[in-house]
Length: 201
Image (cartoon, rainbow, N blue to C red; front, side, top):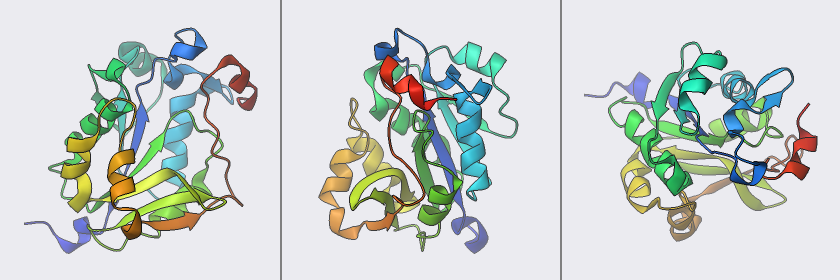
């Protein structure tokens, strides 16, 4: 039986498996940002935003990430199918949380360093119950992070394929999503190409 206390907690779920194909095969988790691997920065953002439990999905160069990045207290989940796209990482991450008894998961992407703790905290604050669905919005357009109440995990995992992640599920349930405007405290750019590396410090 799930306790009310546990049901009211939301885990941070960081998707950090990408191989950086358009970056010449440089794994995104290991890109340097502020003198350390990007994955460390992303985990810190989740924790500062209020996620006490953090699961990190690794894929490309997973062994090297484990060796080089300091991720104490995180649950590290390896996705052997990471080359299939974000959907496989989302499935792996939600699968790792399935028996946790937690009430929700706040999903963030390792390659969005412009999204900080203030945006995480705002979306986290939208959690009400295991049926909650919420997402950050930037000028009214849905982005990350996204919060999935535990009641949505199984159908989201079933629909997560390729690089689409939860996109189809969210589109089908858009009227149930609480949009949380974060454009005043965050920028939702991705680090996808060499030109995007200008955003890293």
